[in-house]
Structure formats: structure tokens, C-alpha cells
Image (cartoon, rainbow, N blue to C red):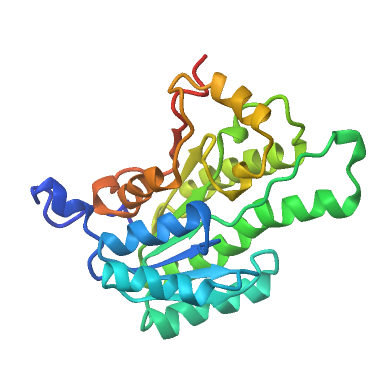
Amino acid sequence: MPLYQPADLNAPVLSQFSLEGKVALVTGGSRGIGRQVVTGLAEAGADVAFIYRTAKDATETAAEISKATGRRVQAYQSDVTKKHDIGRTIERVAAEFGNGRLDIVVANAGVCQNVPSLDYDEETWRNMNSVNYDGVMWTAVAAGKIFKAQGRGNLIITASVSATLVNIPQTQAAYNSSKAGTLQLAKSLAVEWVDFARVNCVSPGYIMTEMLTRQPKELLDLWLSMIPGRRICAPQELKGLYVFLASDAACYMTGSNIVIDGGFTLP
């Protein structure tokens, strides 16, 4: 089957961005980038489920986004590092929330920890890779089975500029390598699944999430000095890109990695 093409290629361009009638799922959707992705997909017309692991306010977050957008938004607790757990949860979302369908999946869950490479123990290394790399794979596998059965689907993976460069001065070998693996995984799946799904990556630079605000001011100032855009991105500024990739406006795009970093990777 060839890569999906909309029936009306002459549809007005803004209508191509609509997600009306679509069912979406976002992992790591309770806060930070994930919460903004959930919000953006709902604002574009999709009904959105999101997965969280430990957030205590996930149900309230879902209700707030639903009230603001007028779309169905629901939180599901699961663990992306456990293949069977996340698989069952995604199947449940498709069956119950999606009435048998799931059109868009955003594999966004991720963690970052700065550890000198000679100080890694097995548990620290395993945890970073289990969430950032294995978690993407198990999310993708569960979504891919549904996409293949229905004949069409859309997987978007949150990677990072760290997939293609080495951040300084922090030491984060596990994070960087896990994100690089995720990027290559996305490219591989894009080719393998071209008959029934599109697969693309978003690679953000420094984003003003809770992960960043916990850092010391001198480190933030150093990172800011490296960004040609002279400011750090707000997570709200990413949601339009995810909507684009989820929509028919990007119907011929698969296997791509879109960097959004204020020029950080350019010098």
C-alpha cells in the first residue's frame, strides 16, 4: 500500500491541519511538553488520552484541558518501560476511549539525569534507557499493531537535539545515547511501516519545563549564551509542530526529524 494521500489535495490549507474526528494518545502527557501536546491536539479537534506514571493531579489535568478545548481528554496510568503494561493500556485506550480506533500516538515520555560516565551503576543506566529508548519501542509496538490492523496510523516521537550533539557542560551520556537510539529507531520504523503508518520525530532544544527550572541559574545562563535565538523556548511553542505532524498537512512526511531549538545546533 502506498503512503497515505488525502482524497482532496485541493482542500484549503488550514483545513488540512484539522484533527476533527481523530483519536490521539500521548505518553508522558501530564506535564511539560507532553501536556502542551495534549492541549494542542485537542485544540485541533482530536479527542486525546494521555498516559502518566506517577502524577497525582493527572485526572485534574485532563479535566482542565477538556474544559478549555471542548474535547474528550482522559488520563490513564501505566508504565512505558514495561512492554505488557503499556501494551494493555494502549489496547484499552483504543477499545474504550477510541471506540475501536487510535489514529495518532505521541511517544513523549522521557527522563534526564546528569551523571559522569565513570560513575554510572547498572540501575541508573538501565532506568534512563528503559524510559527513553525501551519505552518508545514498547509504545511504538503496541501502537503499530493497532495501526496495521486499521490500515493507517501516525506515530510521533519526542527525541532531542541531544540525539545529534553532545550537550555541555553537563555529563549525560545515557540520555544522549538513548535519544540517538530513539531517532534511529524512528527512521527504521518509518521504512518498515510505510504501508500503514507515518513515523516522525521532534527534537527540541532547551525547553522551559520543570526539568530545566530545577537547574542552577549559572547553568541556565550558560545554555542561553549558546542559543542564537537568545531565549529558551516555552513548551507552548511546540504544540503547533506536533499538530502539523499529526495532520494531513504533513501527509508525505515520514522518517523526518524536525529540530526546534532557536538555532542552538547551528553554530
